[in-house]
Structures are given as structure tokens and as C-alpha cells.
Amino acid sequence: MDTGMRKTGKQLVAEMVREDLKVMARNVPSVGVTKGFAYA
Image (cartoon, rainbow, N blue to C red; front, side, top):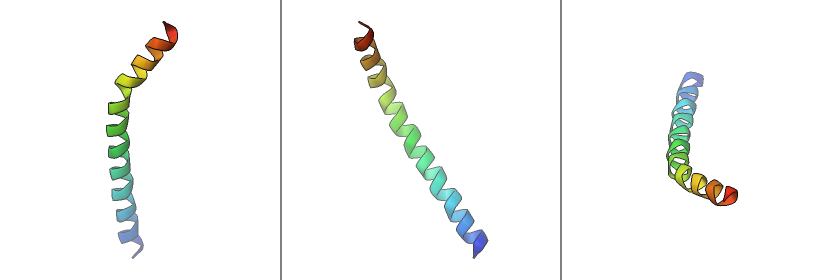
């Protein structure tokens, strides 16, 4: 049971990391634009 739960946890973490990277990749251009406006 313990190993099964640990495996599931790793899978959940991997999925969360993948989603975070997707969101970050989507946000990077807008963040750059926002910073550009802030410095302009």
C-alpha cells in the first residue's frame, strides 16, 4: 500500500509540475510585456 501511494504521489507531482510548466510557458511572454511596460 505504501509503495502504491508513493507511486501515485509521484505521478500527481509530475502532473502538477507539467501543468505548472505549461502555465509558466504561457505566462512568460505576458510577463515580459508587463515588465517592458513597467520599464518604459
